[in-house]
Length: 476
Ligand code: ADP
Ligand code: ASP
Ligand code: MG
Image 1 (cartoon, protein in one colour):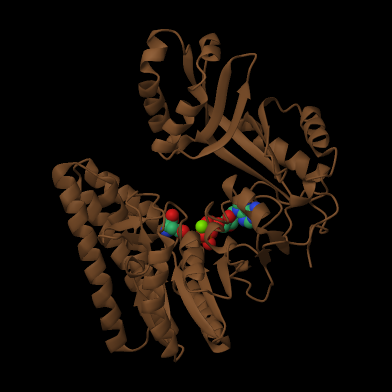
Image 2: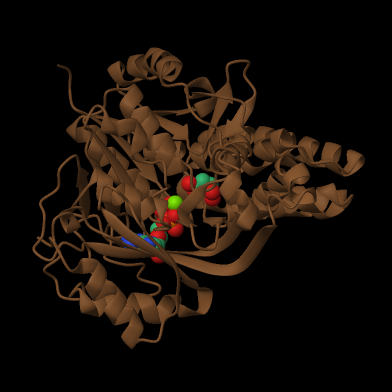
């Protein structure tokens, strides 16, 4: 076996300005001293949002607005460059690269403005520019620390399908390409800095992995390179017992299982992209979540089997932008394929179905999707069931957009009686109205649908109810 290999990912806030990038570079340099280290970087915080806005501005025909947004990004990245790099020649080299990326961005925006058309493919090309701008800055900052470093575009490493805006990797091909490109660099002592969030189809067309997808990039590369660990550097101390923006008393969890972390990510814990753990499960590669602003803290370790804790419940999470869709009516009793057709339709449009609940008495199936997926899902369902709706076999396709899903997560809940009772009693006391309930057969979570305005009281009361505010939650 060779020297240990770490893949480190830095999120938007961790590369948010020159100071942050310098801090990230120090962490990378330390990793490179200890073994082999591959960095994966997000765009500087806020940049992806601004790029998406610029693309939409161009789509409205406002090429000037989009160009102004690009110029603002140029200024932001050049300011960081000036702060980070002392050598004139190195600055000029990096600036040349930034200029080339920005020129590409300008061309995409001009084309979009001219045609007033924004295809998912062009959106990917524009929204991924942020990573292509931040990676040269991070690589330059690493070089400032007397290390060798090279920017590697993920289009050279991660092979995906053609689903723009949420592409899936082909792991075998990704493995071959990544090993071929990255391992020789590491052997020569060069630290690769890889653009997160993006990949390319077999034909070389750039794709993105979905918002927040740099976490996924890191674990895809971790698995492809047989890494010993993946470290996700972010702006909080680790995975917390609840979203700290909603529950001030949330505590850092020292160790959590893949399963638990995946449930939290799936149900909205922004700290991890929902697909982050998929690539590493098979090889059992540990994933750490650590704070780039406090690297002395241990963070959270995500492992195949984490230590369990007494009470069973480890953390809570909530997704707010959920739309509840129900397909039903008395006629569906006689239509045995309604369930199958409903979910093959949602799969075709790649809607992320978050929760399903079927009530036989009301003869309907209801399920939650993220609100971003709602319109395309409902349109596809109306088309699929057009003739059944016309003949009243299916009475309605109803949509409720102001919904949230809360999940109570913990592997040890399995076999711990009374958790559901405790959960619902606490919510009852708080006056929270339950719209639907689902418990996964794995018993790793209980999730329920409530009105959006009830999220805060629900989370805060359950956090107390399960004693998560006390630092007993697997905290070291
Ligand atoms: P990055 O830019 O590093 O990818 P994100 O903003 O995507 O960071 O994710 C980190 C944020 O996730 C934190 O700042 C925190 O507000 C939020 N968050 C939500 N739920 C949790 C949780 N359970 N544990 C930790 N952070 C959480
Ligand atoms: N920059 C991308 C986003 O904002 C990817 C990421 O940060 O993970 O969605
Ligand atoms: Mg993120």
